[in-house]
Image (cartoon, rainbow, N blue to C red; front, side):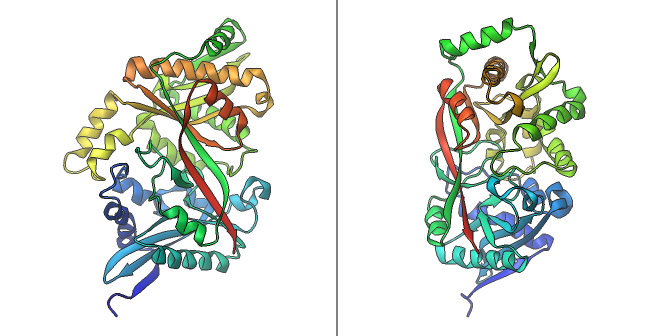
Length: 384
């Protein structure tokens, strides 16, 4: 029958292109969806172009009917995640699935069955999803905040996917939150006083990064990150191949005054990374740099003017996380970057996240600067 659904594993360049192309059809009428650059999307699922594959096993699946692609899913195992403590979310026997898109619930259910079957064949006894694909990329399913576009490196999804996943027997495991705020407004008086006290403390220095020393600065930030986040749910340390790839990808949107390192007695103890929302620049390109998209993007990168700045990562060394110093350094870095974002880049809106739903320290900081939750992402799990 010509309308029979076929689901098959893929590994060719042509099939990966079809995998990437599907969302362009499914979301073409969704004003909140941001079409990714197709070259970037292909790179994420191509082993030779994604350093994460150096410690991952992956199988992509396509669903086809009458010669048309109608669904897709990735089943994958992060071998480093298998070595992490089970109480932190991953651990032995835990595989993942992600990059899920489907025309209807029946297609999704069959795709999920194939993904789970592959995970079982690899010896997995539990599945988490959606995680697309590394925990550092786009984890979780959007369940709140469909009315506005995601910022750089955040995902979007159809509202009905939540019901499909839950009816497939998956239970909520963890929520990831993003917070937004008006950065043209000064922070409350209590925050100002905390910042002023920090500025009077000769032991504290909050400095800009030096992009001309990119690798050296990246190493400092990575050292703090791996310490600060090591007890967090879902933590998997970044590897050298991944760091190299991230550097190549993000270096064009790294600006000295938007990334800060806080030092205590000359020792780096905290950092904050802020990125101009590249999605604002790439959305009009509709996934293609040709024929003139590359020139438009290059011009934007030289002097970006954006509405939104995103803070994807912030960290304070564990030894200080329960102290007043942690929030003081955070407020100082946020304020300095807020000023630069408004004065140099014309930004009016900030987005912080994702933040784990049980990270009370970061949620308290977000609330104190009068930000509010604008998007919620849900990670699900079930035994296989």
